[in-house]
Amino acid sequence: MKFIYPLGLTFVALCLLNLGINAHAQHENPPNIILITADDLGYGHLGAYGQQHIKTPHIDQLAQEGVLFTSAYAGSSLCAPSRSVLMTGYHVGHTPVRGNSGGIALRNSDITFAEVLQGAGYTTGLFGKWGLGDAGTTGVPNKQGFDEFFGYLHQKHAHFYYTDYLWHNQERHMIEENRWEAKGVYVHDLILEKSLDFIDNNQSKPFFMFLSMTIPHHEWIAPAKAVAEYSGKLGDNAPEHKWRQGYALAKEPRATMAGMISHMDRGVGDVMKKLEALGIRDNTLVIFTSDNGADRYSLANPEFFEANGPLREFKGTLYEGGLRIPAIASWPGKIRANTANSHPYYFGDYFATFADLAGATDQVPRGLDSISIAPTLLQKDAPQLSHDFFYWELGDGGSMRAGRLGKWKLVQASPGADYELYDLHADVSEENNLANMHPKVVKRMKRLIRKNHEQAMPQTEPHAPDGQQHR
Image (cartoon, rainbow, N blue to C red; front, top):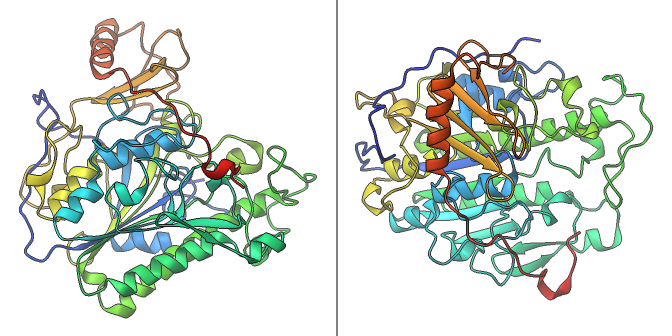
């Protein structure tokens, strides 16, 4: 299977002591911005990144019309902390939500990029998975910068594609068909429908839309028509599987996974068709990405699909397979079509980038771990600043840590384990541990890792609203 490997990296402004904001030229006519995230979609799951088994023509077309990034990183290799990094612009050693239990809430004092966009005159909408505050908490989307929200609040609720309710703003939206039928409404489709309505309703003014899809996260299930496209074609011969009690069965796990991703791809196509039909495609930046690397569990079939391409390991680890993600950006007439770019950036950089494009850099909080990648997107003469150091952590108190400094990646894979050092320019698969050969690099990077970790707020969450269990 052919996969895209990272090109040589150029790091600019390594002398930066504090990661600041690149103040790019403001726009008189600010663009609409659509951010689409998949959930647990790996670096190799898309045709544009070399996938051979799964059809993703609409996302591949997006790559042909724009730029495909080969060194984009998630905020974390787990869902909730990665999304906290995305929304706050702080890396995972500074961001408020670091646990992954599902309902830890952002605080009133936390500022999200959605709030900054609101202040710049944008109407903001979130459709799909949130995971940064359950009902009745300070973390609900309507208190964190979103004018409209439709989807899942608690990320464990987002495990289910045939749930009998979602949240519309702060009210339950009941899905009656799913109360009485095992497979009534595939709620991914309902969420997509609401997102298209949001575009319709806000086409005449600047808007930001976050379409936070749950595919291909478990429970692994797709509409029958989507599975039928692959049924009998991928060598499925396993008995019925289930990830754990209470989750859906899949008689053809490979066909199910492929069907889910192709179904998601069709949803991306629907968004693009809507923009074209309304005549606003040329003033809309569309970014497609994933919240972390591919899942390792059996029904996800990561080995068969080579879901992380050449990258090592999966979601929940600090190797590249957990952190490096697909990322594609398209904006006709602004972003050069059919290009690949190796500039390294991560989820936290979207804060500065969106504020930059909206002409709202003066509203960005000081001290964020965020740098605008607008110069790279737009290929302007303004210099593209780069992070001197990337930082990630997992576990209680950051007991597993990793960092990237130029070509070097330092990993502590488990609590108390020795640090491993890899040269990502020569060894993107992280096969050759060079820690013993470069002790000075290890020492320097360990010092940076210690510097970038701050104690987290208590990682606790309230009980489920009304005592209900998510299903």
